[in-house]
Length: 66
Image (cartoon, rainbow, N blue to C red; front, top):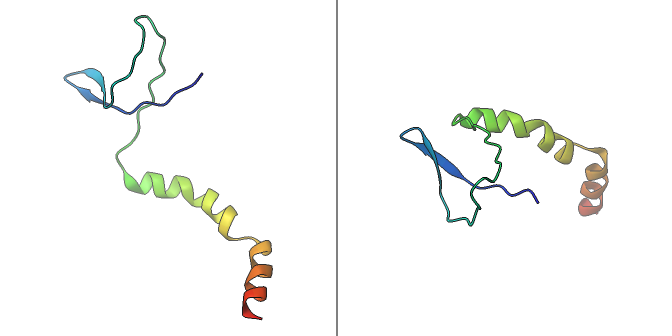
């Protein structure tokens, strides 16, 4: 099972922000997240555009006007 845990780097070591019961020897994959908020906005822009900018929504908008 995949699980995402938030952590920070402190003195060169990764420290979890919340307590987790992880057995010694467990393999983990660490992904570094940029602190740049513009990165996250641009990353989500295409997904949000696909949700909000579609012809199906135009139909509902017309129904609401009636």
